[in-house]
Image (cartoon, rainbow, N blue to C red):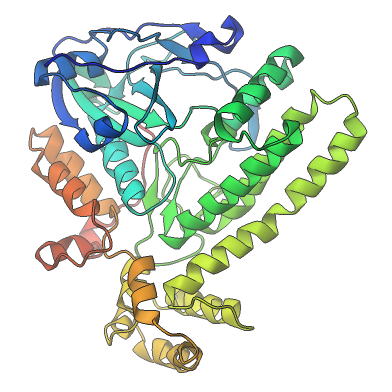
Length: 472
C-alpha cells in the first residue's frame, strides 16, 4: 500500500518572512518504532507498508504534496527575551484537513539542522521522542488539549548529549504550531505588515468568530485558562512554559522536561533547567497570565490607536486570573464529586490540598480513592484525612451522583515519571515492550484495569525521579 497524505498547506502560502524552506536531513537506517493508526485515520492518511512509514517519518522520503519548512518565532525563555528562535530541529511537512474537518500540522521533530538551529545538531535522541509520544497521547486520552504523536522512528544514528545516545524522530501533529513567540518576533522587529498577516491567519484558522487583534487575544486567553486548569487537575507540570512553548491554539505543546506529581506539593519542580522554580506546579496559572500579557504587547503594535488598545488589552489580561480560578474550581469540584457550587467549596478543596501536602499524599491515587476507605491510606497521618472528610461528607449530601462524577474526573493511570524513565531505559536496550504497554494502558486512564494495577504504584525511594531534561 502506498502512503498518501492529503496535504493542503496554508502556512506555506504565507510570505517567505514566516519561515525558511527546509527539507528534512535523511538518516542512515530508519526503523519504525510506532505508528498511530487511529490518528492516521482522523488525518485521512492512507498508510503505506512499514518500510515506507519508516522512510517517510524519518525524513528520508517526502510524500507527494509536502512543502517542508522551518517556522520562525522568538520568545521569552525563563523571562528573558530571545529575539530569534525558530524551529531548530523540526520541519513542518504540511497540513491536512481531517475527517472531523479540523486542519492540523504534521511536523517531523529531530529531523536535522535548519536555518534556526543556532549551532545545534537538529537531532533528537530516543528518550525525549518516546517521552513525548507517551505523554502527549496520554494527555489526549485524559481529555486535555494537546499536540499528538503520529509516529516514532529510530534513525540508526548516534546523537551526542551527556554521552552517545540512539537517535530518533517524532512525528508531531498539532492544530497549528503558532506560538506567542510567533507574534513576538514580528512585533519586536517592527514588521507590522507581517504581524497583521499573522493575526488574520490565526483568526481564520483557529477563532473565526474573533474580531480583530483584541478578539484574538480574548480567545487565546480563554483557551489558555481552560488548558492550565486541566493541567492542574491531573497534576501535570509542563516544566518550560516559555512564550515560544505557549500555543495560540490552546494546546499543550513541547513535552520537554514535563512530569506529573507523585506526592502532592504545590512547589514541586522537576525540570533540571528551572533552577528558580519559575514553572513550579503552583506557578503555572500566573505564568499563563504572564504569557498572554506578552501576546497582548505584541498584538498592540499593529493597532492604530495604541492608547485605546492598551486599555482594552489590559482589561482582557486582568480578567484572566478570575477565569483561571473559575476553571480550576470547576475541575476540582468534580474531583471531589461536586456538580453544583456552594459557598465554601474552594476552601474545602484547598484544605484537602494542604493536608495532602503535609502528609505526602499521592496526588493521583488520593483523588481516585475518594469515596472508598482507601483514600485515608494515602496520608502519613490518616486522621488528617478523616478530619477533612467530615465536612466533605456533609457537602456531598447535596449531590446526586458524586461517585460517578469522581470516577469520571479522577484518572487511575497517568504517565508516572519513574515508569516513563524505566520505559526509556528499556528502549535504549532495544526492548520496546514497556513503551507499547504504557501506550495501551494510558489510552484508558479512567478504567481501573486491575491487571495493570502496578502502573498506579508511586515510586519507591530508589525510583523517585529527581529531575527531568529537555533532551536538546
